[in-house]
Amino acid sequence: MPTKTLAAIGAVTLLCFSGLADDGHNNNNNNNNNNGNSSFQSSLIGSTPGMAVAGIASGGAPWLVNQGQVSIDSNGRIQLQVQGLLLGPGAPAAVVGTTGPVTMVAATLVCGGTGGMAVAVPDLSIAAATLSSSGDAQIDQTVTLPASCVGPVVLVRIFSPSAALGSQLGPFIAASGLMAGTQQNQNQNQDGHDHDR
Image (tube, rainbow, N blue to C red):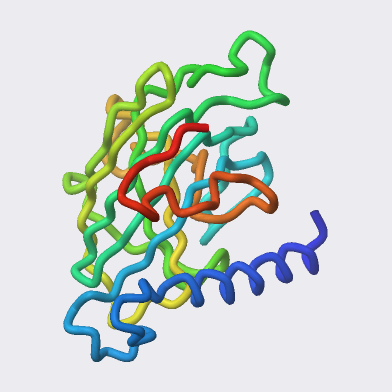
């Protein structure tokens, strides 16, 4: 993908996520006057090969997300839930619709959009989660937030528990974001209930 296209995607992503960062509570627009209620919320989308966010590469095969959401509160608590995170068309035929060899995932927060920096988490503090054979996982990770986190992006990364410390986090296979024209972008909790598809 040409560099100009990646730069344009990064700029649009930064603007989109900056707008999404307001949780809408009390219409305070994240002006530091919302009594600690500020948060970021987003749906999750699968990755495609050849992407990079903050220098972190996407997996070598396409991934799809049936349903997923992530939130980050002002204390740095990341809560992520994904269902149906599976290899998609373009992956080897034998593994399409499965999680392939991936059995664990972890979350990484990036501030500054696709060209930003990942928020560091000590190796022993990474809250990895099991990825079920149907592609379901829940991650609850707390990070130390910088003073401001413009254009937050949350990556769902492959986690290899048997790898040496410092190399357990692999490529990302999903990220916070939107896909045009899909129902997964609708707020699943408008009335407090999940909706079947």
